[in-house]
Structures are given as structure tokens and as C-alpha cells.
Length: 308
Image (cartoon, rainbow, N blue to C red; front, side, top):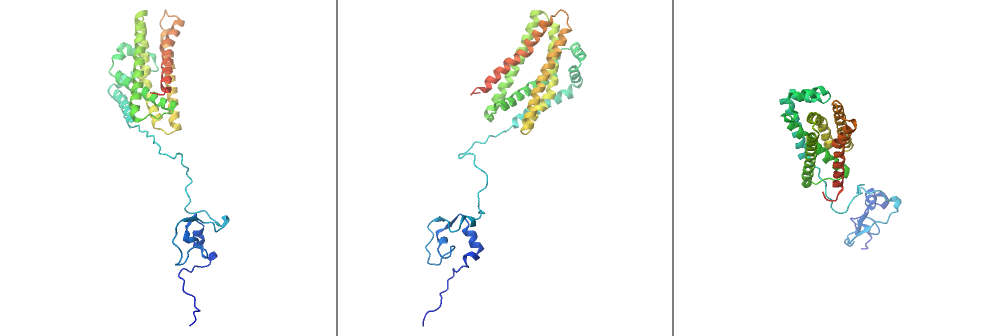
């Protein structure tokens, strides 16, 4: 019996132009070798060899190739090797801010009357004379907490400013030591300044004038911390431009407080007779302005050095 029947082929597929799924697979980047079988373009029959490699699909013209659904994401790598992630953890700095706010709240709650007199003496010299008549402000119980808050706030402000100027992100292991060095430097600076002023009072016999000048300086310092502390906290915890704006505004406020203290000392010196205007200006520049320029220059050279 003649064999005039066509054997059944289980791999018979529709015509090449009629299969949407086949066109989709062929439009992909790579297909196995068996998928590139001549005749179907998609799958061979049972006699095809097993795929041994992947080949680039080149059967269709570029105009017929569509974007693959497996395309890569548009993000571009910045580095090929592993990178160290800078961790900015300010939890311990938050503790310092809480301590400073707690000290100010404690002084306001326990010594409200004296605290109000100090605040009024900031803008009215008449209350400064009242403070001096009632006792030395340096021996008051409210002075140590406010001074500690003031010195810690200035140290945090200088620490944040060092980060902003140099662009460094201090590692956690070194940040504690850096802040402690800044704190010690500020304490030594204020202590040295007070010693120089006291020494000058003994040399020139100006005890009353020097005492009033130091009280004015202390009043300005104790009141200014209530304005500088919130702005310093904003410079640490605000984001990007807001933090920079708070930092620069805080530096400007410190400069204004310094200028106000100089003007107030100048007016206080004019109230005493027997002092030359020239020597008064020279004294204020020596005591107030020159130390800041010296310390600022030393701090900038220290921060720009390769080793902290």
C-alpha cells in the first residue's frame, strides 16, 4: 500500500507572520540555538539538536524589533566597587541640646525673679545697677547653669560650622573628641579673657569699672544663649538649605551680640570720668575684637590641616 499520508508533526506552528507570541519572542535580545531553527524560526521538531549556546537574534530587521519588556532601569552606577555609607547619627548631640534646654528651664523655674532681672538688664542698664547692688552676679546660683548652656551651645555651633566650612563628615569615633576639644578651647578662651581683664583692673586700679564691665558681659552671654540655642538646634536637624540658613543666621546673631556688648561697654566706659576716649576704644578692641581674630585664625588653620 503506497504511503501517501503526511506524518503527524506535533510541532506544527502557524505561519510566521500570523503568530503574535512568536514575533514577541523573536523580538527579544537572545534565544537558544534550537529556537533559531530554519523553517519555523521559533521551534524545531523532535530531531533538532539540544541548544548548546545562546545566539543573537538577527533574523528580523531593526525596524521590526521593539523595546524589550526586560529592559534595564535608567539608573546609572556611580562606582564599580563597594562604597562606605556616611552615617550621620546625632543622637548624642540631641542629648546635649536636651541638657541645655533643661538647664535654662530649671533656672527659669527656680530663680524666676532673678532670671527676669537678668533679662531686663540685657536691654536696660538701670537693672544692671540693681543687680550689682543686690550682689555679685558671678556668685549667683543661676550663673553656672546658664554659663554651661552658653559654652556648650557655642561649642555645638562651632562644631556645626566646622562641618559646613570644611565639608567633612566627622566619624562617630572622632566627633566626640573634636567637640570636646572645641569646648575646652572656648572655656580656656573665656577664662583667659577674664584673667586679663581682672589683671588690668589691679594694675590700673579700676575695680568698680571692671566689675560693671564683666557684669554686662555676663548678662549679654546669659541672655544670648536663649536665642542661639534654638537656632543651633535648627542648624543640626533641619534639611539642606534650611539648615545652612539657620547656621548663617546664628553666626550673624552671635556677631550682633558681640557688637552690642562692645557698644554697651563703650557707653558704660563713657559714664566714668577721667578716661580718654582713645584709650577706651583701644582697650575694647584689645579685649573684645583681637582675641576673636586670633582664635578664629588658629581654628581655621587647625581645621584645614590634614590631621585633626
